[in-house]
Image (tube, rainbow over all chains, first blue to last red; front, side, top):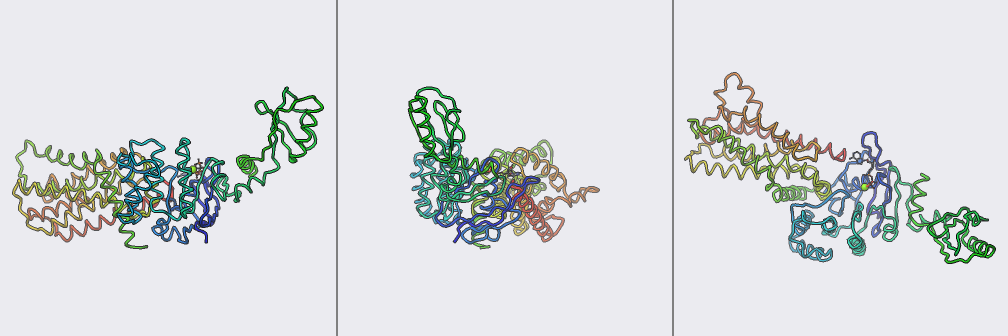
Length: 305
Length: 247
Ligand SMILES: Nc1ncnc2c1ncn2[C@@H]1O[C@H](COP(=O)(O)OP(=O)(O)OP(=O)(O)O)[C@@H](O)[C@H]1O
Ligand SMILES: [Mg+2]
């Protein structure tokens, strides 16, 4: 069964069409990535999926429950880290977690046990009695995550959870997402960071100007653009780029002290480069091949669309 | 919709409001100090019968205390960006509105009851109609907490704007509600009082304490109930609209 099911979602704000006919299906146990440039419509989509924004058209089902028909029941199944949402600065870290747990109807004992466990997991035990007002951005984000997972939700929505965090906090967030996924949560995460998506997600959707322009595993999306592979090569002397462009090598670009050589036949290109080096008496200092990154695929996809 | 779950969500919103907003400066100033100051300004240096005016004072106290938290909560949460998270919890727009009303009402109810107790003790007030007193405290606190929530509903993330706006609405009301001039002595301008919901609350307090209410307590109560429904529905309409616009 699809845990998150959205069909033909539409939303306009005045003349701006933020989301245009978006459909999504996320299966149980997946970590699903939602990629798109600034203003593509990621947050608007998530807000509709989580019942914070009423769509102009379309339906959303969470664990089979229609969010417009029965928002209370649907919301019980999810934990959310909103993009521009934070916890209460006037409550302590622990109180925020306990109150949220109470909202989800957890009994006192499990509330307290869970809060303790999560505070420890997120490294905030020593600050639990401090007002969130006194916390740094990264610490606030951790409390936000704590509140989102306190009831072990079957579905977890995260809207750019790592933006603006340092490496350590980012790692903590990623680890928590993985942990929740292992414990059975299905995750939908939006991010700008493609490497993050690549490392975390089993499938991603790319949204561009409110429309989904592709859904697949990160690897397959990358493969679609495999023709754009390149080789990085450096020589002991400086050379002309034009010397390198032969046969299947379509172009050569300087890249720091190296040349980046694009070809759709890497094997042939390496042999050709060796020949060029031999003929011109050049010494090859290094050669490295690279398949296109998800980032490149992403840029090409959105340029094509 | 599951009724039990809905009631729970209302209580949770109420609990959150009580923990956070009772201690905000503007609530203390406009909800507690302000009506006292108005009262003192009016009475100091005049030779007036305090007992006669006490029902009006109680009405003003309840009016200001109950309607003070409401205008603060939603704009505050929008500015602090906790609103987005609140809406994503298992609550619906009605839970937020009722929770906001309830927390304002409890504040007004408790404060005004204490003031009444203190007044009764100091001025040796009588109590001619206990039922009217209970109705006045209950319905009055709900009605004006609902007014506060309605005032906070327009989309804005600037609490000070809303506080200003709400005082612009609240201040004129106390002059046309039989607080400083008894209803039956108002002459030509008496009709203006009929438009103010506060009139009926003050009248109910008169019935309860001095026994000289102008209207029957049933009419006063019925009007207050209608007022609660109008204010709460207005708040719901506006906030539902905001939910569509993503504000
Ligand atoms: N409440 C709103 N009122 C008016 N326009 C809005 C509103 N919310 C979003 N938009 C518009 O909808 C479009 C999509 O915005 P959205 O926030 O969904 O993008 P996003 O993909 O999350 O971008 P980012 O990566 O910057 O967070 C934008 O053009 C934005 O200006
Ligand atoms: Mg966004």
